[in-house]
Length: 167
Image 1 (tube, rainbow, N blue to C red):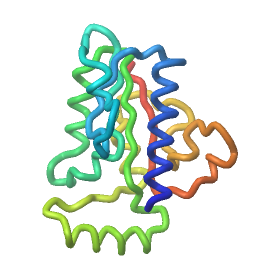
Image 2: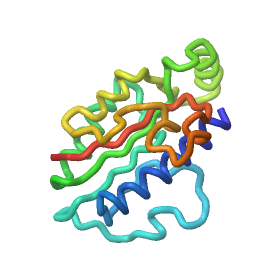
Image 3: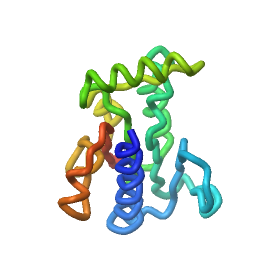
Image 4: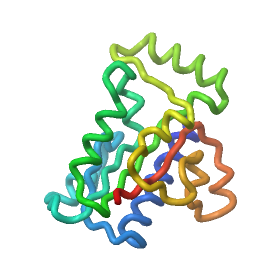
C-alpha cells in the first residue's frame, strides 16, 4: 500500500505538470486533495473562471463513492459543468491488479469504516472518462502514465489513472 500511495502522488505531480505546462491549464479544481499539509491547492489558487478551461482533479477519491450513489453520474455532472478544453484527471485503487491481496485488504478496511471503499477494475475506471477524449497513454497503472524514468514506470502500484480532455 505505501508504494501505491507514493506512486499515486507522483502521478498527481506528473499530471499537474502536464496540465499546467503542455495543456496550458491555469485553473484547477482539486476534489479530495488527500492528507492535509502545507500548500494545498485551495491555499495556492483561490479563483475559478468557468468561462476558461479548468482541470478537475479526482485523485483517489471516487473509491469512496459506492456504485449505488452513482459515481459515474457525479463525475459526468462535474465534467458537464466545464467549458470545452477542460480536463478530468482521475486515479482509482484497482480491483483487478493483485486481485486476491486487494480483496483481502478491502475486506479488512471496510470492516473498520462506516463508508466502505469500492475498488474498481480498469474497465470500470475507464467509464469515468466516457464523453471525454483520453490523453495518451489512456487509463494505465499510475506509474506508467508519462513516467519521467524507467525506474518510475516500474514502481509497484495498484492504482489506475488517466487524464481526459473535454471537447
